[in-house]
Length: 305
Image 1 (cartoon, one colour):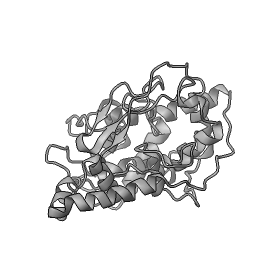
Image 2: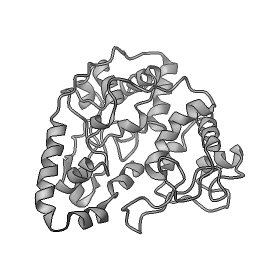
Image 3: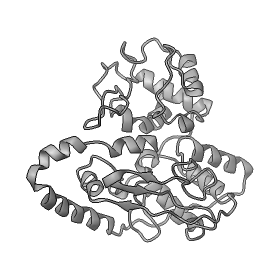
Image 4: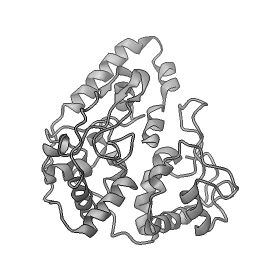
């Protein structure tokens, strides 16, 4: 969620400069484009996946839901699945509230196949795009993990908590259309060809998929640097490549300590913006895979994004 909020801040200064005196007309036009896109009904059928009652599958689902696809967090659907307990206020961009997904909320209205489609494609029950949910970051999850997540969610006790209101402001719509934030999720996903991860192993191949969770902040090349258009108050993402300005000389033990304690090799503590609550729950396979992938990257100087 912290990674998503960082993306929301992208391009604000650039937007004002580019638009100049045509802000109102441009914003109206882009808002209409956004609204039309959100009203699009996608021809994507529910997946042929069903929940499992196997204890091991449910345990896997709990792990995935709390770590690499962290829907069970305070800022998203709440640790009990009953919905966010705190509204994310983004000023003129809008307000976000993760809905109740237990059997007293949306969980009761979605079939297993519809829920699987939402997780894989970002498409809601009515065939339209979900808002804000970062499906694009974890749509690579294999069928087994999607089944596991659904199986876990079905075990959550019913929570009688009403959903908060989610409203997207004009500025949020404009930045989404400009591809500077992601609010219209389904538009960013290739629904014709799913790029799925292999079974979890401590390898570069699997780590390449886990590493997608890092690109939103650290850049496509994972070399860090200031996020374009972000205010100076926003922390600057670090270089994750094996460059001397990044993770050159790091051992797996250094990396493991970082994810467990939030303390870097140089003794400095990670900024609270780093979503350690989720990534810190990564298991040994995920940690080793991610570290192997990061160490396989071409060394890139800090700031290349």
